[in-house]
Image (tube, rainbow, N blue to C red; front, side, top):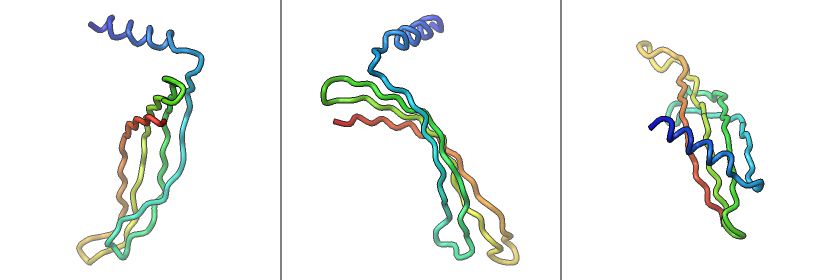
Length: 99
């Protein structure tokens, strides 16, 4: 089973036409928490891979895989809840089919 999957992936990769494009995507973002007065902005970023394949004269197949990070810094909310930071990471898979 494992050999069949690897063989299928290799056949797919080596039979791609020349009109395919691969790319790397990246950037920074600035995020915060809403409804908290003591929350401040925190820098995050995203990086990923993109692939574009022409299906016909009008249709393209463009999947993207992104790893994204966001969060916020916040000060002391009360004498019990002390300040700190919150950070979240997520993986996104986007499938675009532009016309």
